[in-house]
Length: 169
Figure 1 (spheres, helix red, strand yellow):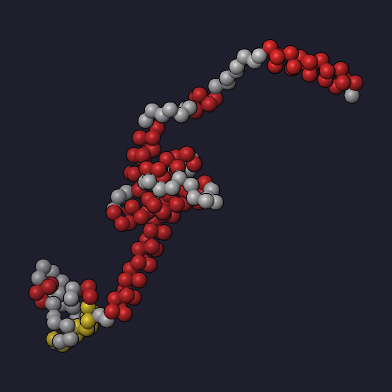
Figure 2 (spheres, one colour; figure 1 turned 120 degrees about the vertical axis):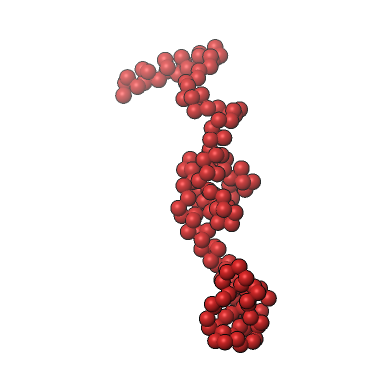
């Protein structure tokens, strides 16, 4: 058994330090004012369940404080980078952002990777990478196409038809 699989009663002096395993008492044997009892399988299951709940709590706590992108396109880009579904059925932008925060929190808690650094690096990469999609400047530009002669004739007919009637009202 490892030290984590035992419950110790009494003083723990002498167990800390480099040679803690050498000084660890044998299970079931009382030594001085210290008694070591082996954990039952039931207690091991409870401990595992408690550890899992604690891990989930740390992830939820961290997810509340992570600064995730607010723009929906940036959130979708981040989810793509983590090979996660971009949109789940019935999920809106707020739920998508919360899901991204949870993913980032899991990374930070389980692997020790800073979520803010991951977000900053991928946002920087996303904005510097050339894309085939239109940029914001292209979207703001007014764009006209020349219509056919039939379209021009139809619009002139509507104009000459509706102007006298609007004047009479």
